Length: 136
Image (cartoon, rainbow, N blue to C red; front, side, top):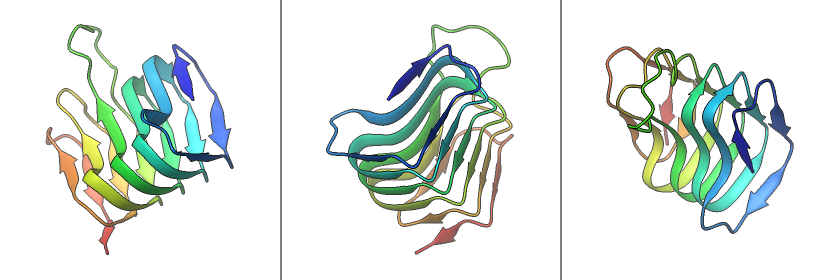
């Protein structure tokens, strides 16, 4: 599911499996969108936020992916105030080949809290909140 320049949308209670791409993709100027209580099994990326702000990824079960949840900046986008204020909370991420959670360059004031992960949490910038995550 890909959302481009969307405001205030929600993906909830879906089962997504067997993809060679992102299962849920909040892409380019997406604001206040939510992925809540979805089951993702087998995708390149479980939930991707590329130049998205104030989005929430809550209580999803993510399995067998390269990256569980990823926030990243597309370098050709020069606008300020994007890739900020996203919340990744209460997710269960297992079987992530590269990272359970990845927060990239020029991504600030995001929160990765109280997730249960099997794999690493990669954060490039210092101005992000990472707390209460449990490594299984």
